[in-house]
Image (tube, rainbow, N blue to C red):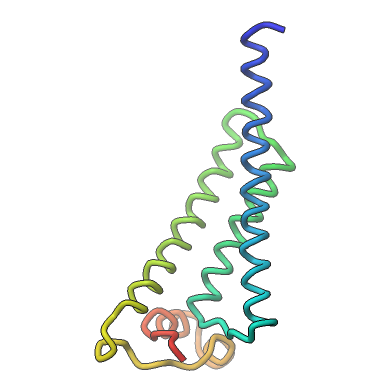
Length: 137
């Protein structure tokens, strides 16, 4: 084997391995979230639910890339989708951390739960309520 063919082989397996590990990390994170919810009885706030959705989305993207193993330009479509989901998840996590670190007198009032909001309000109003409440209930 030439040095060039070894380099291609290494790139092929390292991308695949990285995507497989990314999927595994997302699966472990979701496993712990479900353990905390169902075994430790920690109810997720609406922001936690959105963070979970971002982790699930990233996991799906990693799994699809791992299974499909696209070549050339097509893999960049997956990269863009995964990046957008990841940025969305980071924004939600940043808001969550910001709310948790506010002084007690500055924390916004607690709102209703995730299911109630999305069952009883239009999508735009429910989203506004999720991101304006504290989630500390």
